[in-house]
Length: 203
Image (tube, rainbow, N blue to C red; front, side, top):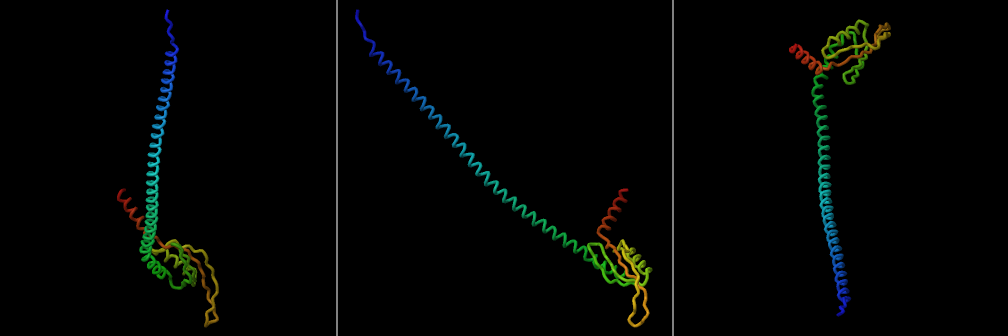
């Protein structure tokens, strides 16, 4: 019977299998490297794209902030101009009121009354003066009450004292008084009258 030696064939098969195994491992590693490279490139591109978007958004936000600051500055300027216009309008409105005020103050003073001091804060007026009698003070208050430009006379102080005249030894009694009153707000009156007329028409 003939004998066949299979060892060389088995060695050759084993070497072939090892080579195929190494080739498979190398192919798997190469494929894994390719996947890793692809993932890295993909994420790098995504990060770069997001960074560009963030930069764009940051620039746009900076522009909007600048525009907002400009708008705020314009609003502030507008408010200042409106305030100045209101002051000018108020001065124009109050100009005839001042004239009427001085005219009415002069007209309301009766004979026998002298005014020594007039102080005004807004529409409140403080008057200090002297009168020959209490009746003269009452007459002055009635004149104030009757004036369309003055209202609410309120006597705060009245005192009597003797006053000596220069050329005579005799003295006469004078009544020193302090009086509070108000300057009438004609604008408010006109608005109230218009409102009353409107309500009357509706009624």
